[in-house]
Image 1 (cartoon, rainbow, N blue to C red):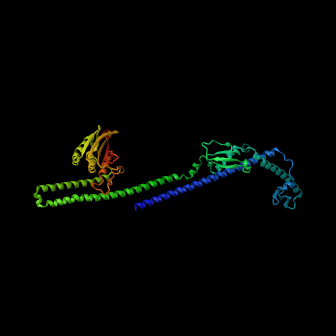
Image 2: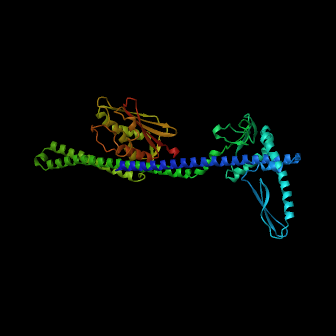
Image 3: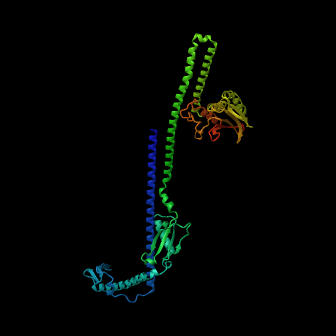
Length: 507
């Protein structure tokens, strides 16, 4: 169920992440397309404005420069009007009379007759004057159109375009379309030379980042000029459309951390539960042995024959004493669990000399080491060795480390222990070294966890509950210190435990 829960939560988070990434990519693509479309529309508007400016300029120059001498005849003008074309207009006279006229290749005709009191003669005279004026203006426009068609593209672009007006048109169009962002524009002539640029580039842009439009698109292809625009802050502008992505990413990160921590906590609790179950099983088996032995011994003491034999009586009494002591040790191990339920152990601190403390513990433990044919050496190098500590707990810590060295010795090699003290970075360190079976590197950080025991396959020659080193770390940390384990050498022979404690002068 735990694995199924982890898989489902992982799948749900991956799906949520995929949807977010896909949604963001769609928004970026759409925003980029809208940006390009808006810029293209603005550039086309600017190009059209420049064409109109040029037409207006030609009309002003030509109409002021020349006098139209030979107005086209009515017959030649009618040739410019298609057979289907006609022009309608109406005139309202001062007396309220409305006259309607139609102008076509056939001439000008009155289509709607005025009221009966209209004066036909005045109407005919008005039509003749209007026709002359039309002929004159049409001739002027024909001359202007001819000049633009055959002479405009021959001029250099610098003479055809007012660059200040171009820049003004471009800025106005961009602002009106909601693109109030910096830009760099340039005009490139037919020879691919830059003839105008509003400001310099910080770094040359890529060709794909430039937006281009043809100036005066009706010019011959070989004479065309181009307007190019580059937006340095386009990426930031497009990214602003997905500003929601920042809080979304933060919440997704929080969700991921919560998910990861939840799965980690579940597996940790599962492992802890399994360890506790193993602990209870081991403790049950451990308690059965001394209880059974004491029970058997008490039954034997009821036998009057045994009580009459002093040697047998002393032997049975010694067995009961040893097994009772063993039961007390097991009960003490169980009581040690209470230390881990609270935040900090109750310590009775007083001034202690670490050198004297270690020397006393090593001296007491020497008998047990010699029992297995081993030796224990002491090297007291600490010049500053006064600490605030709970004598009972610190003594238990040292006994636990020395006892582990004896438990995990190599049977084919004489046991050798080394206990040292020293000063390092203004603190006291105590090290316990042995030449036992050693611990693999991947297990060194786990051995201080509750109920943890280094895997040894199916070999269970050393009894234990995985509480000793957890107790050691708990007491050392409650004293404001730290403890670590190291390999003696690469062959995994021997282990070195190093305890760091603060000195009184640094408290």
